[in-house]
Length: 79
Image 1 (cartoon, rainbow, N blue to C red):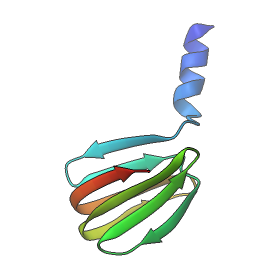
Image 2: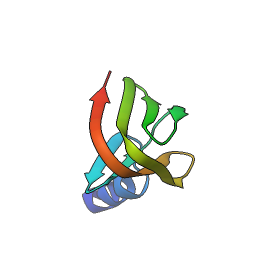
Image 3: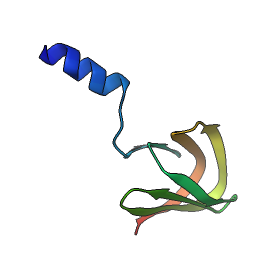
């Protein structure tokens, strides 16, 4: 039964999470995107706001609950 619950949690991930890679940030289960341009992306989540600053930022993947931002990332800020 535990294996089934673990699998279900993996497939139906519902918690806000951030995955940071080289020159990429993947945000899962955000509430809304407030602003994005080539220097800043602002994302709201259940506990506040998440701000990505950099240069040449591009939204590479955009889904209802997931966004992938690619570019030269200079800072990440949680509010």
